[in-house]
Amino acid sequence: MALIPDPLIAIIAAISLLVVLLYRRVNLGIALTATALFLAALALDWPTIPSVIYETTVDLPTVSVVLATFGIMLLSQLYKETAIINTLSESIGRLINNPKIVLCVLPAVIGLLPVAGGALMSAPLVDTEAEKLGLKPDKKAYVNLWFRHTIFPVYPLSPPVITTALLTGVSIPLIILRQIPVVVVMVAIGYVIGFWKISKVKNGKETDLKPDKSSDFKNFMISFSPILTTIVIAIFLGLSGFDKPLLGFDVVLAILIGLAIMITISKIKFTVFTRPFKNWGIYGITLAAYGAFLLRNIMVRAGISAVFSSFVANGSVNIILFLTVAPAVLGLLTGSPQGGVAVSVSILSGMLSLPFSVRVAALVYISAYLGYTIAPTHLCFTFTADYFKCSLGKMYKYVLPSFLVTFPIALLVYFLF
Image (cartoon, rainbow, N blue to C red; front, side, top):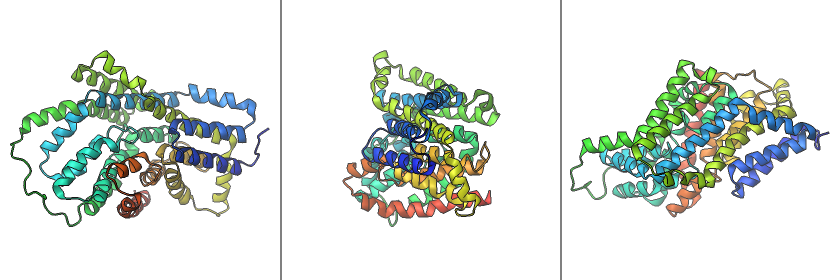
């Protein structure tokens, strides 16, 4: 017998717990898993809870996402531990002679390493380049935050994209293809707002040294090769149809190859290789992937989606609200695109047939993602504001208009394509 027979009350209580935990800075993995177990305790017969946990743990798509997330986090940490990330960013800065373009590219490239609060990695580099343009702290903070997050909607190794693909049954390449127009608009609006009335380099010169373009390009290609190879292989397997029989392990395979290349080019010592395994953060993000699937499965078992489907059936709520507003609000409240996607997909699974259509999966993901991007609980947001000594209010002066321009494009893509 469930403690709370009404699924709607149970899900409201569970989401409230998730928001509170994340606002208290509890690790996302712990927060999602605790929320799932709390919901199970409220909405399920207790003897059935172990079976749901077991089914989730041995489910191959869940296992593949967990392994892929761990591999991505390991690759990200190795970039930091070996200092190859410094070589990558410095070579980009020397190859591109325009500070504005550098400020657009650097945060995005470092964004390829999806570590929690990763905007802090690009902040010093952005600060240096932004000084050449005389940008104020609030503009520096905006540029660092916004351009870091322009890459994730079309990045096949982004854990939220992988989670969305496995939860909805839609392949990763098909999801990211529909995000291209959104990303173009994100870059365009970021450039306009970030560099409005900024026309030239403040000091009138770049450097007295002539850059060695061939050497810089070689350094860039070598340092970028683990990420590039992983991306190419993951997309190839996805587009070739191999992802179906591999049940999501295509990304795991691609990451293993990327890790092998990283080990080769860095000639990493064993003591350096083992350092990321001592970092709790890598396990926290990995646990978040598992928690998202556990939360989805518990919501399905509890019949949560049936409650919301009745709202749509009787005309009380339009389905588009569930595809846009719900994921965006959940992403905003939780500061997590994975949390927003997991809850939204669980609700929608009773209204729409699985696998979801590509347009539905893409819209749910980008809605949750954009909501997360502007969330005050978003670590990149708070870390960036703290680094540049800028209040959140001053950052929102630029972030909210960017969001309001970008979000309608996601809706337009849904309706037109």
